[in-house]
Structures are given as C-alpha cells and as structure tokens.
Image (cartoon, one colour):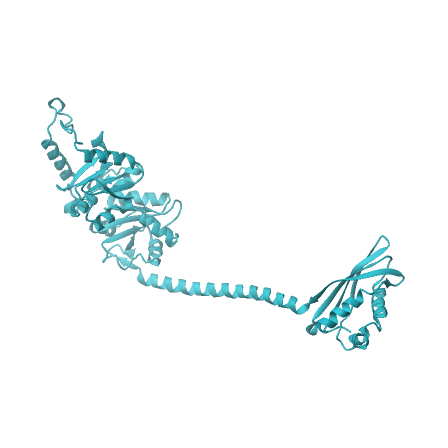
Length: 427
C-alpha cells in the first residue's frame, strides 16, 4: 500500500550495509520480521501500512566485492515522536537474510519544511517574473505617454519647417542639433529651446535665429558631427559648442550625459583655438555683417589702428607700430596677473580678483560668464582662455576693470572701462 503523498509528514532516510550479497526483498523482510512486536501494537509496521499511516519501503542496493550497501526510505504520516521511534527501531536490525548487516538512519526529514522551501523558491521566481512584467508595463506606459507628449510638443519652425521645441521663440538662448531624433531626445529631458538643422545644409531659419539669440551647437561625437559643426561655424553666429561623448550620438545618450555635455560647453573662439579650426571664405569672413553691432571686421581694424596712433612708437620701426616705448606691464598688480596666468596655463581655469588684487575664487572657464553676472565685487579676471566680445560686454556691465587671457578673440567693440591684457603682453 502506497501512502498518499499529500498526507506525508516525515521521510525516514537510512543507509544499509551487509557483509554479503542481499536483495531488496531480504531487506524488507528483515525490517518487518525484526521489528514485529518490538514497539507494541500501536507501532506495528504491518498495521501502520494497512491503515496507510506509513508508506512503502523503498530500497536501492549496490553489490561490490561480495558486499552490499544501499539506501532505504520510508514516508510516514505519524507524528514526530512516533516517526523517530520507528526510525530508531530500524537501527536495531543486525541481520538481513543470511548476512550480518547494519542500518544507520541519516535523517528524519520534515517533508512540509522541504515543501515550504520549494514553495518559497518558486514564489520568488514567480514574484520576479510578475515584477519584471509590471516594470515593463509601467515603463511602456510612461514611455508611450512621454513619446506622445514629445510628438505633441515638437513643432515645425520657420519657412524651412525645422523640427524644434515649443520654447524656441520665447527663449533668449537656443540649442542647435542635427536632426529630429536629437530634438525628441532633448525634449524628453525638458530642454525645449532646441532646433534641428536636418543635415549639413544649414537652413536660413537657423542662421537668422543664431544672430538673435545666444546659440549653443550640440552635435554628435563622430565625424558627421564635426562636419555639421564646421558648416555652422561658417554660416551661423555660434556662441558655444557642446559635443556628445566620442562616437556617441545626441539622439541616444541618456539625461546625465546630455546635461554634462551642455554644462561643459566651450565658447566658440576658445573651441576654434583649442582645435586649430580656421574658417575661411566669404561666409566665414562676413557672417556677422547682417547684425549692426556685429559688423565690424572693419571696425575692429579701425579700433586697433586708433590704439596704435595713441601709442608712442620707435621711429626706426614704422613697419611694426605695435611695439611701444613703454612696457605694457607697469604695476605690481599686473605682474601678479602674469604669475597667476602662468600657474593656470592649460588648466581651463579662471581666477577672480577683488580691487586689492586678492583672489576671490577659482572656477572653470565654462562657468566664468555666469559667475560674473552673479557677483558685484570682481575687479579683475585672469583666465586660461580667449577674451571674447560677450565676456567683455558682461564684464563692462558688472564694472570689472581688468581682464587677462591667453589671446584676444574676434572683438569688434572694446569697452573703454575694461583694460585687456593677453599672454603676448607679458613677453
């Protein structure tokens, strides 16, 4: 009679060894025969099997070199005490068939504990599956909603129908990217003043916008991004340049890299100087002439020619009027600027100084314009970068008296109240 597995509580597991060759029937007969009457009527093995309180004795034997060993198992629905008594009775058996034998109980396993472990392990697997599916569903819902909002937010701007964000008109600054997918990715992260050029042929709409607003170009970190950047530098009025990480594309980088790339944007003149980029041709020379304040390659020449006329020059060196009789560096404060400039060379850092020439703080060059706008006690700036028109305008508005940089960029209107020194002035 086989015990119902659903009512099994314990499983007796034992090992058997015999000094001769024995068979399964010998083991079962020995167990029934040698335990009969040993434990009384209540625990008689035959009666227990008839009432289905114990199951069938399973025996597995292996014979080798004239000896036998194996394992036996017996399921029971008895309580814990009765089961261990029955297990101990098995160990009283000393002969199986004609051979001397020993039985040793390895364990009495609580089947319910084993089942409980199986239930727990299976429940963990099922829970993980449910959570994964729920996560995918919620992500899918969120992504679907986000994409729907993006599609609703993206617009076609201007006569050229350029893909753009909804804030392109209202914002004082714009971000120029390559294509529609780049616009969608930036919209996903809340950047709504973005517009796409759609390739290397830059639309007139984008060119005109770049003259009206502070313009950041954000391109891929590959060869294609470099080509688009060069085209934009030739035809548009670019203020800052941001690049995706090398080999990565703007359309696929995550929010963290998007924000990091835009935060690390570099002023146009500084970028061109760092990578030795020279813009030649009609567009490169005249791209600022549509805006009255930005005309002046001619104005720039006139400004410097007037400056030269005001400076005494060596009579024998008429061909080099920039050489002055008096040295440019005349004060201890300005000599201190030279020391600071040498210390920060190559670091892309900026040092802000007060009216006494004492350092206020050192910051990255990319944060310089924002820091000047916030402060009111900056008297001088020494930085590892190029002095640009935008920097001069901001410095003039915040009453900065002196700016010291590596070189002078494309400056067309020099504020009278700001004195500019470059690395050449210290040589």
